[in-house]
Length: 254
Length: 126
View (cartoon, each protein chain N blue to C red):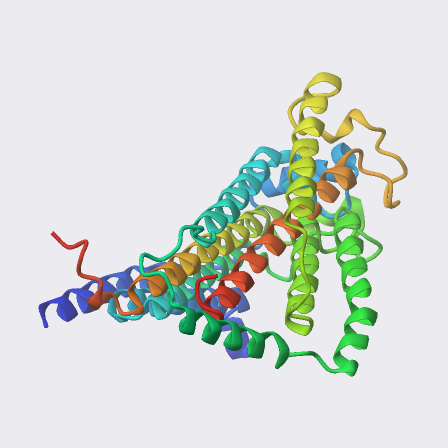
């Protein structure tokens, strides 16, 4: 009861704070100084029409590197928490139990075969979803979208694959190599910015190109491609971990 | 129209964000099921994102992307603040990572204790 009272009091106090904040709120009619600077100077300095991308990739590029690192650590944490435990349970299963287990495993592996329609639709749709993800992260400097959004779309393609064809196997080595290589290349591009241009993750060591073209805005398409690949494969690995957890739960501790 | 002028769109988004934050915090504090606590966290996260986006809104502003409709030399008067949008992008990704780790903890707890109710996880109490 006292606990409930505490929770109620805390929420009421927070509600009062929020109410005061909201009642004193007035919609701003002009940009903040920082936003004004970015909007005014961004297109010329960075060459990217999408100003959010200009901020995320270059002006606040270090934050984005940190963000990618946080995502990497969380993916690693999921992998650590959901790893298969190799050691056997202390009570060795008897012959009878084992055969039962095998039988139940057989049932699980056979009763969920996807129908022909699902399989064909997956083969047709999956390349398009992946292609759309690539389009979104390649055009991150021109239109709404970017590395994280494109990566999320690629991961949704993986989700689709895992739902439609549960038997499909993702190569964990391939995922790890692609992810590490793109993360490494991201940092290398950042360091190239230090050596050839103004600072870490400066995109101007490559020519800015024609404003509004696909290959423009210096290194932004390159950086967002690496970010998109990294995020896409990382989230795919997380999904794969959860899927395998599900399978091992079903068929006992194999 | 008059009512819309009294309550600008960003104020509505701000209040919804605050409401979601309170709701999520309430869920995190009162629920005993781990999955529900995680849902509460997600609600609070979404509320925070909405508050941040609404703070960046400028009256009549459009998306901060320069194109034919938003010419470069007049963009300063036409777009919303891009800084909170960029921050929210970061916050969404980090929220996703945190949620994934929490869910895998939940899977792990369910595997070892066969329960998701935090009242039954008594071994770590001191």
